[in-house]
Image (cartoon, rainbow, N blue to C red; front, side, top):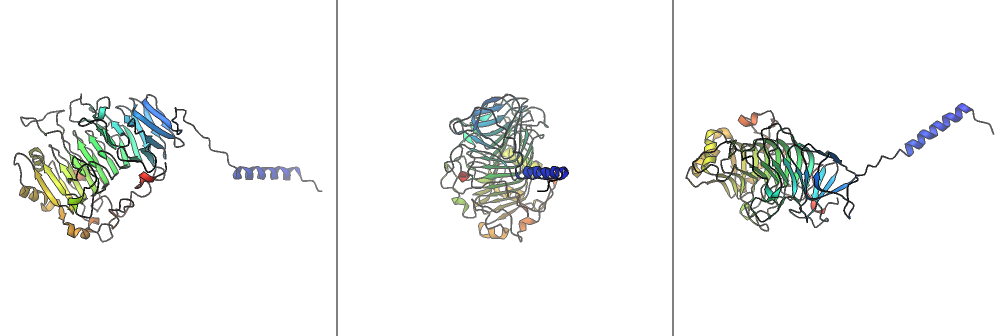
Length: 473
């Protein structure tokens, strides 16, 4: 047999080595979290997190009780990570003042906070929720405690305060009353004095046992929010919240509502809105709650709105409940299927409307039993006055009767709880006519043409989940 030359032999060995490497690439190093584990092998998080750490997508985690990320500490979560909330201990993740949560998922790999209950057994309020606490301004005394027995205080003077970043995050089956006392709840995502340095974008709250989102003061902005099948309110603003929100959608189960009367928007300062002498001062109601929302869609039912409650602890109330001296403004928004469209509540709130503090513009109230409801104890305004104010020509607000709902060109799958499609039909009048004037002229807002949360881009596609009760995690 003819001998191979040394050069040819070396070449053949090199090719073989390269081929072998391509066929059997080096394994990716497996990084293991060395934390304590539960019987299911999940890494247990409890007590305090006092040093910065990263939660790994290769692991699963369990929140037991109140888990506090303390001042100066950053908790980072890798894309695709799943964190479970323990039911027995009402597991909750609390980012204290001066701490940060960096939870930046992707559309392909969202970060998921969900119930630790088995598939098929997950329910509203299985665990506490995610709580962000910041140093941004609010209008309550500095000694004001957080709800639900969470330790510490909130708020401060740093409008640019940064509590971190949440992007492509789902929070499922959270939101729970922690005691029989009033104001003892945690919401799906609760924000106390959270500042504008914090980033919130592409977040879905599903099956919250209380509000889906609640802001207590602060001025954090947000885009692309989903509130899915919540129990109480979808977007609740209090204590001087002054941030901006664009692109938010709420889809409700018409059978489930709360005893307090569930709303899409609920906004107030404090009860009753002023002191007995009619005044308010710094840190006792000022600054007024004055967020600006644009391009929101809130859907309950295409059926009879007066029957939009069956199995929950209470009934639906209003698409928008503005009360207790709030100064909220809402633009380019569509509300469908609530018993009441807009409940305007209290003399101080009416005064804010007259002064221009409250703006409702490009709002569509559709398929409501009663579009406009004046509620006050001082006869400060009447239904005729509220109607005149709401329907001023320059505002571009409209009411659409249930019998005329089809004229809005909503997608037939809009109200499909398991597989919604929120994109309007191509002929929908909602695709035009949006306006961004006054408070909505702010550079934060994309100057889109459409009313509601959707034009031609289905921004919920790929990262949301509308069947989380049956998902394998």
